Length: 112
Length: 111
Image 1 (cartoon, rainbow over the protein chains, first blue to last red):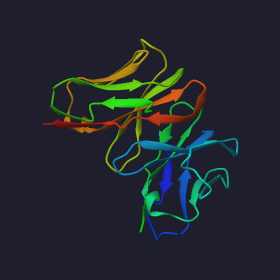
Image 2 (cartoon, rainbow over the protein chains, first blue to last red; image 1 turned 90 degrees about the horizontal axis):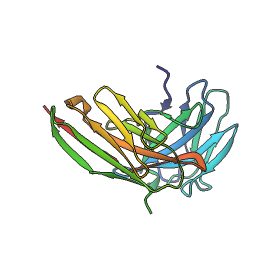
Image 3 (tube, helix red, strand yellow; image 1 turned 90 degrees about the vertical axis):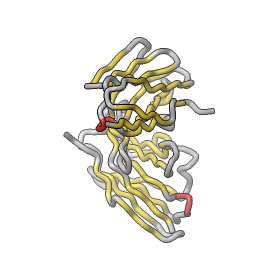
Image 4 (cartoon, rainbow over the protein chains, first blue to last red; image 1 turned 180 degrees about the vertical axis):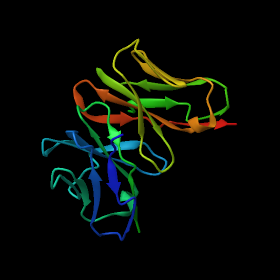
């Protein structure tokens, strides 16, 4: 069964450093998303991406965040200067028609 | 205001003891309601999509139903391997760019 692949599974970074989280969505999917889940809290929407541009972003997704689809297969989330409160599980998701998403297994980001 | 509320927060069942999880929502113009299963340290795994009141979907021991205000996930004769957190998410009719997730129900099925 096709799956969304995320790397790395765990990333530890120093506060203030830049991190890039990587995702390979399912190949025929057109809609791409990033969500995050702080430990013990709800899954929260960050950003949606379609047709090579951001279609919506949440209040969390400020100027420190950016997304890119650098080639036909990868979808990345960059955090320019990480803060302690950015520590969370980050989930990439994709869908063929903006309805049911397939989520990846997540990247656990720990900012120290 | 929370768009999606799930109850109970946690549920402990004996193997074979059927029960239901609740998801109530307040979005205007529901486009779709989604149930996911999440195991510890993993991403949400898709279970069901429901689009209109009265709709029902089944998969093995799970059955999801939808009304105009809430959805139920019925678990019949659960097994220990059904232990997980069950997440409900909704999509608004005028904004299908994102889901609103509930906090989930953590289900523990004892053998």
